[in-house]
Image (cartoon, rainbow, N blue to C red; front, side, top):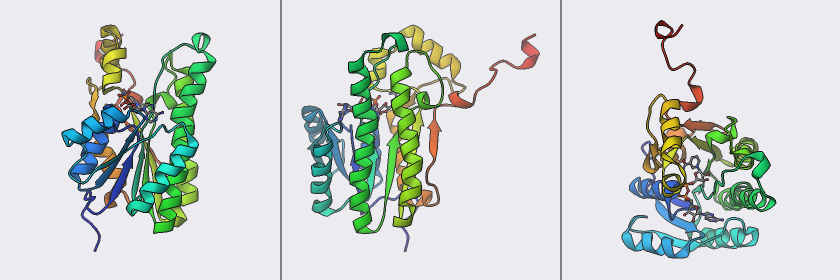
Length: 261
Ligand code: NAD
């Protein structure tokens, strides 16, 4: 019998970048849905602090992992697979260093590419190998609205997330025959330690004005969508980039024609 929608009991879910922000919200929601969470992050101390706090649920394990280190990605995923398999992989680890095209340094470009694009790619590859051996699985990549909308100050970051969208679609096509679904979530602004630090009051006000829903998402709300995409309820969805952005990416004029000439 199929599990009820959004029931992840008996599933093992790997989440990258799970020590903070959106990754932490996803890991919490996966644990609440019944999954055994395997939380990974480059920040080993924060991971163990969250494990000690019980953030990943009662049966969680943690593995320090820099997703930009391809050899480490393969060895950590192989170890996790050998421990009991991988049913769900959420490739969330990422970083955003805002800079205009003219101000972007080679170091910024290479680091964002290494973590956001290369990291996502090889985590998908490592997860897919384990999933094929087990007969199927679910992959959820964390992209961004920046992948499709030209926001100033986001040129290198946007390129990395455009790569995530492209690799999501191709992987969905290649892996469907193995029972693996691959989707991405494209959040708008989310309340996280990163956005709290980097968004000035003016930037925050500009965001709220541009979003019909007029508030930032909570990390757990992104987690709810990740649970949905990893669950039997989403069995017929693959290769999609799901905007979770309070209507930002579909908004046209915000004033009724009655009020503007
Ligand atoms: P965050 O900085 O709060 O958390 C990111 C986590 O990833 C941290 O725990 C960090 O230690 C970890 N990390 C960084 N580099 C890593 C690496 N090389 N290997 C493994 N872990 C690493 O950021 P966040 O806002 O939660 O962002 C999470 C994801 O969501 C990113 O992919 C980001 O691009 C995307 N995103 C965020 C927002 C937003 O508004 N916060 C919007 C759209 C997309």
